[in-house]
Length: 204
Image (cartoon, rainbow, N blue to C red; front, side, top):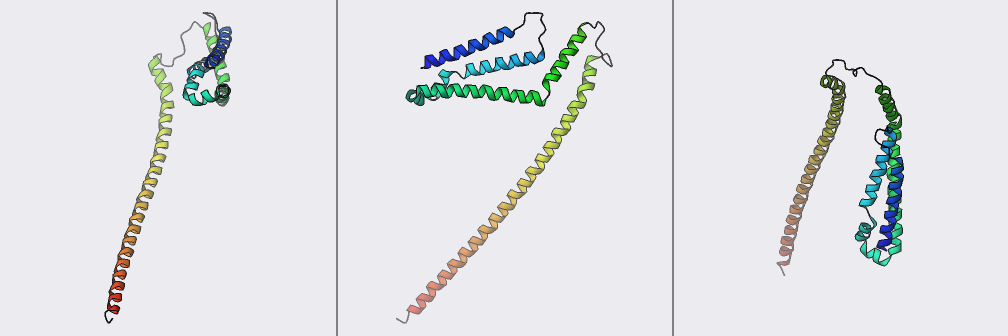
């Protein structure tokens, strides 16, 4: 049954490789960034499926596989299918939220328009390092301020938790003292009761 599972996985990988080869481009041919992203996702899924092979799956659930080999195969197939589907849905959601297709298509358009441009690229100062710093520095400063705000909020929460823990410990200590005091009072009362009983028994 393990050989059948390996053959099933190999057939799936061959099918995927054929699909990816049909989308491959020859050297010098421009490929859109959207298609490149999809190809990257397909390659990632292929490697993921190959890493989680049926043989490794059965090794993890060896006893169940020995008892129910057909059921193990069906569970594995469904697991792989759901895994691929969930990953593709997650990536599609990320692409939708970030509007990646429009952004990547815009980049492709900029690259195509820049191919016929013979003039140097636009740089305010003419110094690439200085221009990069002037462009990226505000972004990183904004990220720093955002992270600093998150850190300050987390530190405030940590202080509140620490104060709550100290208050709880203090309350626990007070309860322990009350318990000890009541225990001592009870012991003293018990001693007095024993003395009283002894006194009452003396005339006999």
